[in-house]
Structures are given as structure tokens and as C-alpha cells.
Length: 99
Image 1 (cartoon, rainbow, N blue to C red):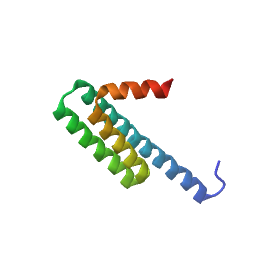
Image 2 (cartoon, rainbow, N blue to C red):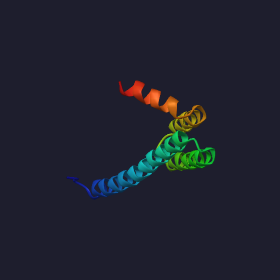
Image 3 (cartoon, rainbow, N blue to C red):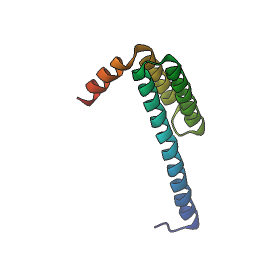
Image 4 (cartoon, rainbow, N blue to C red):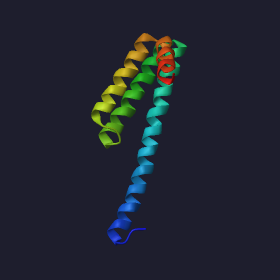
């Protein structure tokens, strides 16, 4: 337990920030899954829309400081490569990383 008023406040604000950051991170994961699903379906329009939405979510997370700028750029780059190469590439890289 905190000993001072400032430590108690810091504990409260840290918890609020943690929950907010958790929400943003889950939005990133959902947007990435939408890109993967659209790529697997092969619909160019859905893929482009999902990729645009993913870029937006990642950029907003970087702007808020939830993830760092380089992390955002890396994730966007990987998502773009995934969308360009197709779903077969995603399946092979996922299998390689989990094995």
C-alpha cells in the first residue's frame, strides 16, 4: 500500500492508464486480424479498407504513446507486406514462429 498521498494518486492514475492502454492494444490486435481475414478472403477492396483502418489504429496508438513510433512503423510495414504477398505467406510465417 502507498505511504503518501502522491503515491496513492500515482497508483490510481497508473491503473487508469494501464486499462486505457490495454484497450488500445486490443484494438490493434483486432485490426490486424481484420487485415489477415481480408487477405485470406482475397477481396482487394476489403483488404485495402482493413489495411487503411489498421494503419489508422496503429498511428493513433503511437501518437498516444501506447506504442513507440518505430514499433508502429514496423507493424505497418509487416501488415503491408502481408497484404501484398497474401495469406499463404502469413500461414507459413506463423507456423515458423510458433515451432
